[in-house]
Amino acid sequence: MGGGGAPLRRARARGPPVASLDVTTTGSPTTGSGGEAVVVEDLVIRYGELTAVDGVSFAARAGQVTTVLGPNGAGKTSTVEHLEGYRPAAGGWTRVLGLDPIADHRRLSHRVGVMLQDGGIPTAIRPSELLAQYAGFFERPLDPAELLERVGLSHRAGTAFRRLSGGEQRRLSLALAIIGRPEVVFLDEPTAGIDLEGRDAVREVVASLSEDGVAVVMTTHDLDEAERCSDHVVIIDRGVVVAAGSPAELVRPSDSDHILFGAPDELPVDDLAAHLGVGVRRVSRGEFRVETDPSPANVASVTAWLAERDLPLQDLRAGRQRLDDVFRRLTAHDRGPDAGEPGGTAARRRGRGRRR
Image (cartoon, rainbow, N blue to C red; front, side):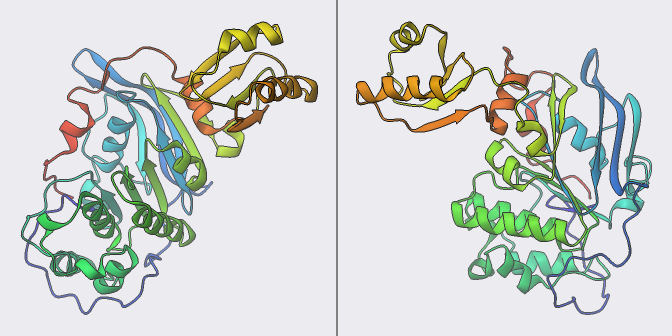
């Protein structure tokens, strides 16, 4: 499969690269009756006695961005690694473009792109050289020079890989994942460590992929990014799916029993609670929750109390949730770092030099 960990070998002559950034594939993706390019049913993955993934089910459609969210150790990385063809399952049924991701890995290698965290790239190679070499592995590759421009790396085309910043290396990894015009792309934390300008470039590429009919499966810890960029979100915790749907469906209030607002972190919570006669608690730095229905009268009471004390109101949500509110509520429990996925994400994905 295409991606940052592919082996570097002499490219075979297959004609000149196609000078276009249109990533539309040569044929129609192999999808299910509902347009599913990726199907996961009751997936189970174990590490010895530990069950990291315990009956996960979801689907990713062609032409959509599906984002898999979860705390460290939730099972999301193991799930995606299985779909990439690198993590065997202990149970369940999965298909990528109608094929078994493990048994049919070789058949999928030119139809699926994978963006890795890091590792597997010679440090002295230049981005222009690397993309030109990868282009030779595919029948109809994207044009390397135009792809570098699209990810904002034209000015670094002749710079050794080791001299690129972490964010620039991430953008190059994205270019490697899509140069072969894949029908499915797996993106692991695509904007991690990238500056604002680079992040915008990555998001534009992701949007163009879905517009061209590619199924994009993404993992991220940036919940704002997930809410803005995703067509479908799957939240995994402790190895099971705890919620799934479009961002709009997930943030739709299931009740209207609280008011969320932002204010200085030192706000006297007990004083406000006594004034309102209801519970008030700090849910995160500078954010507070009032346990009462968000009626105009109750909202006015909160804002009037702040005004009397000359405390600024920095945010107000009455009956409306954000994706991070949903995520916090569904995954609010104590857990150790990377519990449930031995070795942790970074340890497994760094410098593995996996074949694609």
